[in-house]
Length: 500
Image (tube, rainbow, N blue to C red):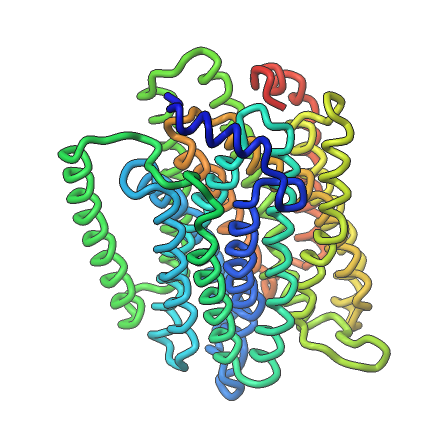
């Protein structure tokens, strides 16, 4: 139920155009997310390269299959933790505090990885996973809360917010990648921690501009109910910590392998997805319009998982291809292979304003969200298809031109802009108000499944399966899925009940 104060806040937001025509609070969230993404993508740009680098150069000397398993588990868990992160914000602390606590954990994780030891490396990954689970879904919820329900600026606001994400993602591979590949891997990890620290400082000092956004949990609870949930959360956290510690000890002793842990993680992800949606549809008391919208959310979840499974190979398969099979030089000057990770964000910074303007300009003729999802899936498949001849040349012993990867990133950027910011916005519009943070976690759970699959596919890089065949299968699968979404778009649009 919306209070009089909240109505007043929405009225003020509608007249607030201080940040490029958007509420001034968007500036605070823009720069917080920019630095958080600087830390995440800076570390990710060198992660699989560090794990596969020889010990003589300071790397972990893991084989590609093991490194791909670690990469897949890490990136999957980063997004999967958005579910409990959204739940905690909805019921206990609110999005505002969740973002702050998450940022502190992320910074601690990167600084842990800056210490040259295997134990601190894996500890850092765990801390970043926990912190991102708190920060990522809740900062997006706060963006949505800056706008009224019918504010036509919402999609454009999310696209502008997405530019903040990609501003950080552009600079981070240049800084962290150069430090990591050319000087010392751990300097690159440390630079990511410094970036997150900057993000925390500006979040705290800029919080006044946010008004009431994110201040309160979405589900009001009594003190007794909150106490019970807090105790249960503490017990669950302790049990999880014990399980993680026992697993780490088993891996270090050689009782089980990292690949086995990755396999179990995949089964748990599948089980979690099935159980969550079963609970959502069977246990919830939803109005007919809410239930129809939840089915659309489920379809978007599946589409997003398929999209990210192909797209997120930028940090795994494509990163290895850039390092081993691409001629990394421009006008006679060589550059670290991690620099390719800056192509996607710079393309987004160039193209996102154009698409944001286009969506607003089209007004009621703006393509529906399901249609944009279909375009995104077909586009990501087309980008992978472009790499098939490059993979064949690399298999013949040639190093290919940087233009191959540049073209792929350009196509994938256009596909991403049709799906990712639109998906973020759609979740805030389609989700029932009482579980909006939790449903943002569902969006990131889809990214979790996709990232897990992406990492495992990277483990096939040195396998008997030719790389061009792998690209063929991925491209065909994504394009077929896009065609299915295209056929179902009218039905999904009708089920959205007036939401575009």
